Amino acid sequence: MDDVEDQLSQADWKAIPPATHVKTIVGSEVAVTLGIAGDFGGVGVTFELARRQSDGSVGSPVNILEARSAAGSGWQTSVLLRDQTKHQTIVFNQAAGNSTPFQWGYKNDYFELAAFKWNPVVSDHVHPNYNFSHSVATSPFDGSGYVLEDGRLHIGTNTVSVGSGSIVDITNQYTLRSRFDQTWEGWAAEQAFYLNKAVARSHHLRVFLRGASGGWSEGLIRPYDNYVVRNGQSTCDENGCSAKTNSLSYVLFIWEVDGSDIAVAIVPPNESCYGHLNMSRFTYGPNPTTDPDANGSIDWHTVVAAQDTTHFPAAAERPYQVRYLVGTPDQLSSLGYKSS
Image 1 (cartoon, rainbow, N blue to C red):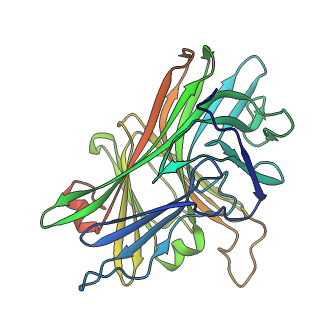
Image 2 (spheres, one colour):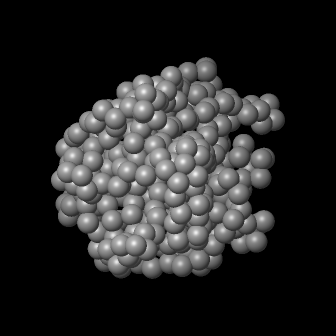
């Protein structure tokens, strides 16, 4: 189709794809710089936090994302579907993938952080017999990848007044369009936010969870060390930790930047959503003794849709979005996004 861009890019598996499109949004107390890899499905590779100084200048930024091998990490929307005909779960990233010995993705043209055309959404891997401990790589290069839909990114930004100041307001939306009429027995969409583990520790990352309708709260969690999420399911072993929360109102991440705290509230589209908080010790290989966080990572997944029997008509467009509010902890607290 004329509105689909299917030109592929390829890079080393551990490489950080370059940010081809960058935008800075400035609030009264903080500034946020976002960058996407336009040659790799528009996955986010930059989410920099910086404090505004008393003279109005912006301090030294800190990129909180884990952007190595960003075609399967970084900041992006993913889809999982249950294929009962072949007894497998198929996993799709945001028009990109990294389960092969290299990472790949589709190019696009963008206005700021919004794509002009659609990209093919090709599967990254499958889990035979629904076994999530085992996967088989797929890609668009050898015909192994499944192609059911096209996708298009739109990241919108704004500022929101808070008292005498303002915070940064970001909405990351990925829209899927069915290539043909489809019915599935299980389907889910989630937005992943992969965080650099070494940056998380050095900038004292803290995580706070608030349940649907304020029914429960947890935190302080330091996700670079072992942790437990009581309101959900949680495990740790020699490889890392993983947790699935109960229904969620929001999650609050707080980093120390330039000696002061900057908070990011991640808000699902509704309170039936939930999240996954994971920590890996060895994502990129064994950790050197000099830096126990060098090859690990932290990832948060906002599950925006999880359905059983699902029907998607041909050419139907379905937007999935997650909101990110960035400011000081006091500013976000005044909007109801509290750490306690």
